[in-house]
Structure formats: C-alpha cells, structure tokens
Length: 285
Image (cartoon, rainbow, N blue to C red; front, side):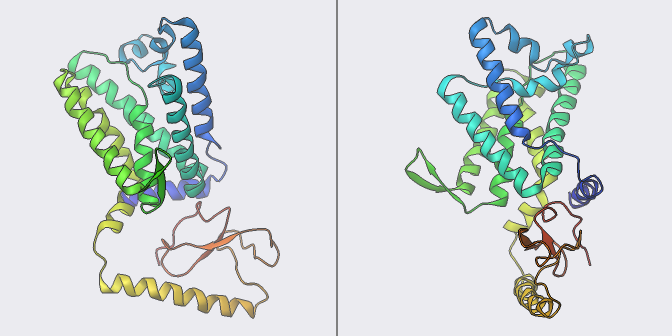
C-alpha cells in the first residue's frame, strides 16, 4: 500500500495538471440529470442503458464502463441528501489530497468495479447491472480515516463523531454482502469488498498507523517535529522570510497571499505552499 501511494504521489508530482477539478460536482449533476430524465420517462429504460452490464459492453455498448457512475440509487428527497453527502465528502477529499490523487482514487474504484464485473461474467456466465453505489459509500471511509474525530449533526441535532458513522457504514457493507448471498447473487454479493480494496490501497497505511499503539519513539518523534518546526521558524526569520515551499521555492515574503503548511508525513521537517501541500512526493530521509 505504501509503495502504491508513493507511485501515485510521484505521478501527481510529475503531472501537476492531471485530475478533474470538482469531479464530484460533475458526477452529482450527471446523476441528478439521469434521475430527472428517468422520472419523466417512468420506464427506467435510460438507467438500464447506462448501468454497467458486462455482456452489453462486449456487444459494443462501451459507454456503460463510464456511465454506470451516474445511476441514482434512490429518488426524491433521499436522492438530494445522498448527492449532497457525496459532494461534501468528495470535495473535502479533493481539497485534502489534491484533484490528481482524488481523481485517481475514483477512477481506480471504477476500474476495479468494471474488472470484477467482467470476472463475474466470465466465471458464472451471468451479467449483472452494476452501479457506483459502493464506490461512493467507500469515500466516507477515506473521509473518516482523515478526520475521525470531526463531529456532524445526525438528523441535524445529534452530535456524533465521524468514526462512529464509519463503523455504521462498515456494518452496512457487511449486511449488503450477506443480503446478496441470501438472494443467490453469488460472486456479485462480494462487490462491496471491491470498494473496500480501493479504500485500503489509498488509506490502508494511514488507517493502520492511526489504530496501532504508538511506541515511545513515535511519540517522541511527534514532539521533536514540533520542536524542529519552531527552530526552523526562528532560523528562517534571519533569512528574510518565515516559510519557503520545498517544491517551488516560493516564500511567504514574496507571496504573502499564499498559505504555507508543514507535512507530517515527510521525514524531517519540510514546508509546502498551498499548491503543493497535498501534491508532492513525501521525503523519506
């Protein structure tokens, strides 16, 4: 997982223009448009032509490889709530990771889902209609890994930490697997695990480090990081600036409008501007 993320970070560093800005906004509006058109049609034919179907793709309907992410899972007020939820989670992850990494995250989820759909078809001979429901729900796991102690108002008045909602989300995934087995869906019952795999590829290392008990050396390294940051701040004041980006070299003196932050995932103490704090190769030594 760590090696995979290093390659992703390196790719994003070498291709800073890669990524779809506001990706979830496009998906949300596309899903809303599909729902509105389907509501006017009332036959659900549009959704059946957009959902992923391995047999249909092999017969030339290749657009299904992409359009299956636009299939709404519900309607009415519930759809609006889900779409708002997906947009909020997706846009937050994009701000935290950068558009490049978030785009790769979502595309990887789509790729794994499509591959699993083809594998299921070739193994069982049955083709299932598939949507991006579990891809969207798995984003909440990534959000909870990054912000486990943030609070939200459940039903607009019950404060609850994100990590507890993530546990509920995980229980839903388990329920979905057993429900699929009970309905005789066979291999397709394990589709939620595909989204979980995508989550672990991107957030597994962060999750393990957050739940594993920290050793004395790890606690000391956190203290040393803060001490080193203060030391660097003092040294940089004598150079005419306080912060300098380790990627582009811009300083807070030359660009006072920029925000500068330190990266706790890099070895040592390294400062980055707002354009590179989530889009750089982490220092390993």
